[in-house]
Length: 395
Image 1 (tube, rainbow, N blue to C red):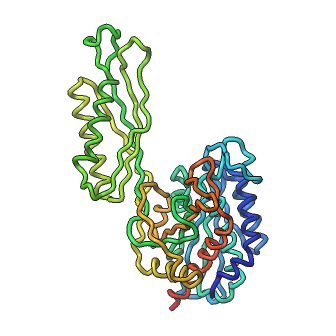
Image 2 (tube, helix red, strand yellow):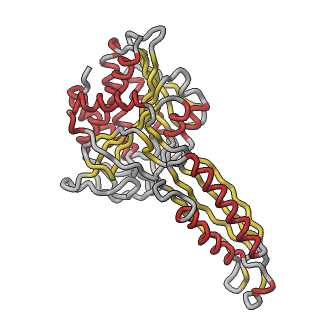
Image 3 (cartoon, rainbow, N blue to C red):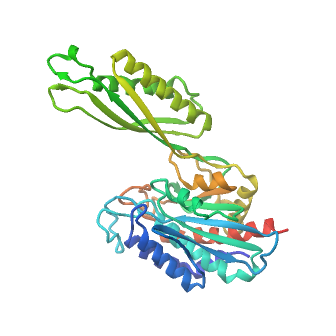
């Protein structure tokens, strides 16, 4: 099976889907209408969607004509949530929901997977196993994948495929490299308790704000002095809130930030160092400090050579040797990692950066959009990977 020509046949339909979903974006954990509309299309194709009570997102199964005892099930995932961004693309089909936009390309993911499903159903009788379709909510808040897993979305699944359309990667290239692809994402909160005093008498109080500034400064040494410079690591303080009035010594400060790394070992080490810094700096200043860390997502790592080969071979089969291109690992994160923690997975990228055509905005930008001729390529990859995986793993 080669899905390149079939993807071209369905190209206009795939583009229509992208434009529909682009116009009606919904925020994470609010994607109920998006879920309903996706479900409608799956039902029109003859599938029976499985919904969650009180939570968006859905799954559906395609049982291949050659599925049986010993055959495998492969999952295909697309995320469906949008961002709290006011759109400024100028598109005729721009968002109708004020302050909400598909600025990360999830509208493209929805349409590409729907196209992939259409093509797989055309060849259902030839499939040597089953395909689980995952339309996942709440990727942007790293909660949707976890919810779906807890509610059985991966039950019986042997492998999972996911991909992202990417504004920082040249169109129309594909990438399925081995090794770390995206970083872990952890959120930390630092709370500092001091003692209020009049601004004219700082010696009578304990300045929580000054203490906080020392913590921010010292924390930079986690990256510059405790981490191997060849190991990517980011420690970022994103918010700082405290104080009561311009002439009062602040008695409380709360700071929030994130740690990103490709190393599981450094992930734990960074937390240990941050806790140590807060403990010692607050002690020196006579304050009290607490640190809370939320481990949000693991790194996305392509560490299953067989899946990488299947994906790369699928791409080359359809688009030739030159369709693959190197893409550096990045410090952004993806909750697809939760799926990969449970079953073998492969995560790829489809480039959308094309300055000749004017597509230069990055994901999460209020002007992010794509050349829609790329969508058929992403749809074909969904279908080709699934079919080739089932063929390769058939007993």
